[in-house]
Image 1 (cartoon, one colour):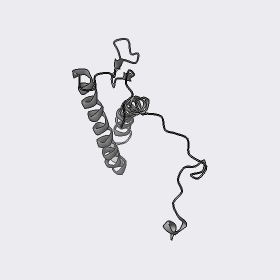
Image 2 (tube, one colour):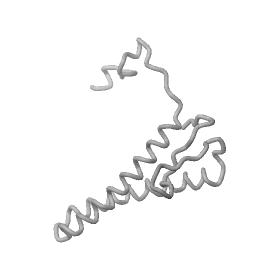
Image 3 (tube, helix red, strand yellow):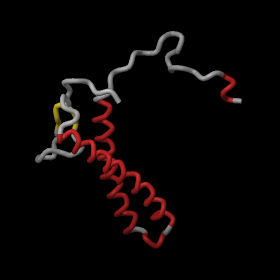
Image 4 (cartoon, one colour):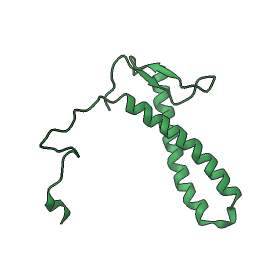
Length: 116
């Protein structure tokens, strides 16, 4: 992933009033940047574990509706965190050039033989 210099980074936690919190991306190796990287990694890990846990809860109907309510609440929080990570990382990507005429509007196309 390429980071643009002099950009603000959306941090993976809200500010004190619940509003988005930003950090200057000039110092990628700084303490807050590393803390944000570690927090994002943890948030993505929690979301993955919740996905696996969802399969367990859904396969055991004895936990319904309390188990489902808790699962949905936890997954909604994880989805919010993962969305924030995606937005933050997306803002830090360099823009790409539009496809050339040879590539077509849909980007590179695999050869027809790839589908045989």
